[in-house]
Amino acid sequence: MKSFIRVTIQSILLFAATILPGITAALRLSPWLYLLSGVIFVVLNIIPFPAAGLPGKLKQERHGADLLCDFLVLLAAEIICLFIAGGLWLGMFTGDFWFNAAMVYISELIVFWNGIIRVYLTSSMLGIRWRIAGVLCGMIPVVNIIVLLHILRIARSELRMEEKRLENNKKRSGKDICKTRYPILLVHGVFFRDLDKFNYWGRIPAELEKNGAKLFYGEQQSALNVENSAKELCRKIEEVLQATGSEKVNIIAHSKGGLDSRYAISCLGADKYVASLTTVNTPHRGCEFAQWLLHIAPDKLRNNVADVYNASFRMMGDSSPDFLGAIKDLTAESCEVFNELAPDRDGVYYQSVGSKINKALTSVFPLNFSHLLAKYFDGPNDGLVAVSSAKWGSSFTYLESSSPDGVSHADVIDLMRHDKPDLDIREFYVGLVSDLKNKGF
Image (cartoon, rainbow, N blue to C red; front, side, top):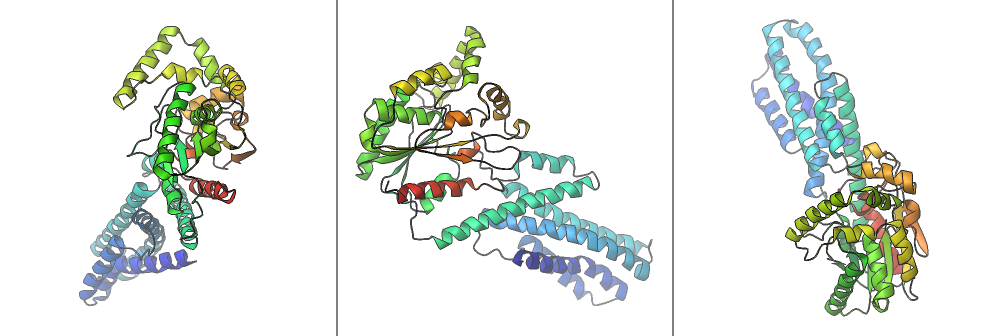
């Protein structure tokens, strides 16, 4: 209701500012009204109605969405009023009419571009598809309005979600609901590194820290076999314990990171230092399609791809990347052997998370392509890992979304910073870590 009232008032003011020059000329009113209308128009375009309490990015997105609403209201109202005014006061085809019509048209363009640029630059839920659709359909009558309405709906949905999150954080401020007994160690998956400038876990760590979590990162190399990655994780666990004085850590591990963590716990003695392990879309039973790809790919092709990858990640800081070793440990046959060698250890709480893509064509590349292969071999999957393979431990959480793309292997860690209208992935992790705290971990 507040949003509706705000946009209505702003639309009325902008409407008055755009038609006031024409009315002033027609009725020969004071020329100072020209100046008044110009000031109102400029102010409302630079600083739309205040958005107190919102951070800069959200404030600009809300301003942009408000201006797009204004544009649609003005477009309908001004077309009607201009033709009425033109017929009654100026004469439909006089020079004055066309001059004022041009001024209104320019004003509409300013409001539209001011709004759409703000939304394009600030919305994470909008995605690349609708940004492109907006550009391609911009000059197609009727279609452009339909696309604009959908863009506006997405932006409004995102704003409601963000405002709800801000309100939740405000209510629980100072409660430290994510301040677990033991620090959290976030362990990344294969083919990625923990980078300062681009967090593998997207916006999740910042949300957890707002609510009291103490976070560390695995920082293992991007591609090693499970055993060697686990050795690096053991060293990292020791560093965390020394830095914090804590007795144990809670591990949240994504993808292959879950296998690395299980090996460290079961085979390298890290069970004494791990209170809980939460695996997120980890292929505990391997990937049949990865096994198939390895078998059909010619040796020369496999080796060339491995050489290119290993050389590239040496430049990014890996000391001894092993592309093929990492891939082989993700196959179904390797994981079958692994599960016999690495049984769960007493004293460690195990739980898991899984998800799936709904429609491959709407998901991001290359997960949309690999999803089709994984579906053929493994069944419902997130683009890489089957739901059945992700289940492990005493509890399993299945994340789902009614959006066409579902919840992909990247979505579960907020890698693309892309929100979904019915799944707040950041809030999910707040709940997950809060639950660990409540369990005494």
